[in-house]
Each structure stands twice: as structure tokens, then as C-alpha cells.
Amino acid sequence: MNDFLDYGFLGRALFAGGLLALLCGVLSPFIVLRRMAFAADGLAHASLGGLAVGLVLLRSGPLPTAASYAISFVFTCGVALAIAYFARRVQSDTAVGACYVAAFALGVTLLSLRQRGLGRLEHLFFGSILAVQPLELMLLAGLAVVALTACGFCWQWLGSWTFDEELARAEGVPTVVLRYALMLLLTATVIVATRVVGVLLVAALLVLPGAVGCLGARRLSLIVFVSVLAALLSTLSGMAASNAANVPPGPAIVLCAFGCFLAAFTWSRWRAHRRFHPPPLFPIR
Image (cartoon, rainbow, N blue to C red; front, side):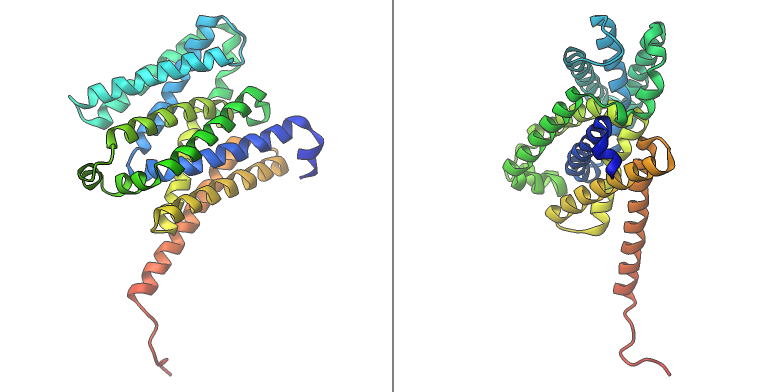
């Protein structure tokens, strides 16, 4: 831990990991319960196309700027709208798969055409949390504040909509507004998180903490709490393991998150077994 205090870039990485864990931990239960895991993965891949379009249009350096993030957000929102449009005419998973592979291929093509982008492909695939910039820290902090504020104001609506959308609509809950608000937050999160943990790993951080929360609790408030706790534990332990074993931090964080998922799954199975097979009142001698 002394290394994180001695070097500025390690301190920024630790701070970015904590903010990302808080943000993904809050959003993940709603993604899992609303069965949007594949959509989150698709938007994560599509964000690469948006980042590439922003870098090419602005002719900037390899590091994204605020303007390139804005262009990427608009592009990825366009992909989300295209998915919603095609989902009315074909299966939803088909629409997600068709749109995200096209956006992902566009991003790889544009970055490959630029000589300066070739060296950044690996970072965009697997993340570079140790190279996080102050801009990413501000964006992550802003998104975390927006997510927490939105959850606080819409908590009652979120509880009804998450578990039973039809009943929530009958009770007057603005389900369409909640769905699009979640998609916008998800889009903004995957764009920034792509730079931190990479395209191939961001979907794991948006799914695994929520899965741990759903396995470990039943009430929505406890599910979100356990999800945030699992995300923070995975991030801190993953970065510590990365620093100790000299391995990339992004995959280490995701592996720790998967370890939390396995532990929660094992505990839930043991709890279910104990519930349906209680111990005898009198031990057999």
C-alpha cells in the first residue's frame, strides 16, 4: 500500500478503481435484474467505435479528450437507439449482436488506419488503469454522483420497476423514463470504463457485482449494498494482486470479482441445502 502513496499515478489508479467500483456496483443489480447483461456487453464493444470516431474527427492524440468523449457518447447512444429500433422487428439479442459487432469493427478499422492508434488497441481492449488521466477521474466522479442521486430520488420507482415492470406500469411508474435513464447512465459508464479496464472486461464489472448481490440478498437495498461491497473488494484485491504479482490490473480485478461470484454462489447453494435439509433434532448415535 505504500507504493500507492509514494507514486502519483498509482494513487490515481486506486482512486479511479474505487470510483469505478462504486459506479458499477450501483448499476450492476439493475442490469442483472432487468436482464440487460448482453446489452451492457454490446454497448461496451460499441463504445470502442465511438472513441475511434472521436479521435479521428478531432485529429487529436491517442489520449481521449472531453470532446472525443462527447462524440463517443453521442455515437454509442445512436447504437443503443439502433438496437431498440431493430429489436422491434427481430429478436433483441440478434439486434444487440448485429449492431455492436458493426460498431466494434468500425472502431478497430479506424484505429488501425491511424498509426498512432495501433499501439492503443491493446489498452482499449484490456484497459490501462495505471495510465488513468485526471479527466477520467472527474468523469467517473461525476457519473457516480449522478447514479447515487438518481437512485436516491427514484428508489421507490426503481424497486417496483426492477422486480415487476407490468405492475409498476399499472401503478403509474414511468417505466419508459427509467429504462432510458438507465441506458444513458450505462452508455456513459461503459465509455469511461473502457479506458480504465478495457472493452473486454467492462461488461464483467457491470454484471458480476450485481450477480453477487442477487445471490447474497433478497431486498433491493441489501442487493445494491452487497453489490457495491463486492465491487470495492474486487477492485482493491485485484489491484493489490496486480501490484504484487506484476500482472495487468484489469484482468486481476475481474478475476477477483469472479472469485466473489463463486463464493456467493457456493454460499447460496449451501444456504438452500440447509433450508431444505435441516439437521435432525436428535443426532443419530
